[in-house]
Image 1 (tube, one colour):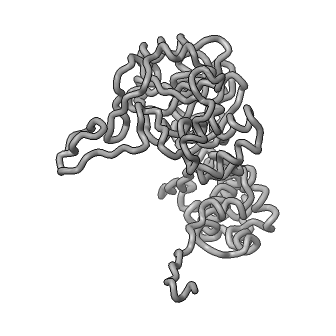
Image 2 (cartoon, helix red, strand yellow):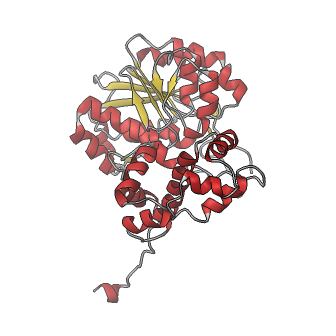
Amino acid sequence: MPRSWPYGADRGDGKKVSLRYIRAMAIVPATSCGVPAARRDSGAGRDSGAHTVVVLALDGVYPFELGIPHRVLGSADGRYEVLSASVDGRSVRTESDLTVTPGHGPEVLAEADTVVIPPYAISRASAADPDPRALAALSRVRPGARLVSICTGAFLLAAAGLLDGRRATTHWALTDDFRELFPRVELDAGVLFVDHGDVLTSAGAASGVDVCLHLVRKDHGSEVANQVARRCVVPPYRDGGQAQYIERPMPQASGTGTGPTRDWALQRLELPLSLADLAAHPAMSARTFARRFREETGLSPGRWLTQQRLRRARHLLESSDLPVERVAHEVGFATATSLRRHLAAEAGVAPSAYRRTFRAPGPVLEMSGDAAG
């Protein structure tokens, strides 16, 4: 099978590619989120006064995020005209196994009220020194137009100097590289999106849905945004931020220094372990133990214990039905209130909300017609 193929071409296995939802990469299906095309498109022509959104597709673009602005903003009853463009008017190779053909070249960016930069595959080198054609395309954006990035799209805005001195966000897994490459940007890795009015940045993947719904809410109010969310079968607003999605693997304890004590403590997290208790295990003074512990982990013993208790608590919330009070007891927090406070500080959500987000649903039972009757 070829790496990519055009619409309607033979895939090599006797079947035709049927991308029903792609039309000149403006991803506008016959029905968008269940809304009939005639109703959705009414009054949304080029001269209708609709807010023009241009999605700039760069080489290596991620197809899911590329489609988000078309799907979400295109479901607002013609309030937005969503177009797509490439840096040279040609087809764009996506990060996945397909090639897309945007409907426009970079000249359409001059007409945009909002420009969206969806994520694209980057290396450290390309992040620091992006395609000059992409920077040239950005220079076509007229003053006063709104810029929006999703995930790695923030790297292009930062490389263009458009985020200097501003707070911004990107995918949590790329925050270290982003901070090193763009020290003038105040990066916030714990939020789903940041709105500066004329420039908005969002975190990874599905946070593009959050920021697009935010645009609808900002432009047309909560009632319209909630209606769009219902059509797209997504929550109109998500509690917390991307902090709750960040992986926090437990560091491996070494066999020397304070490593054995960390192993020992991990088996006793439910106990009220003090600095004196930890220092007594390797027969060190509390001061010496605290110094060596920080040298090896970068954390104080107390902060490390809190992190490990939260990690264990998150696991129990995801994998068990234990009440929050019991979870707190099992991991060593004195009260459920203490667990709630620490989890809110780390993940931005309460234990119950965290459980709803990450707990796997039970099996869905399908009833036969007789049983259902």
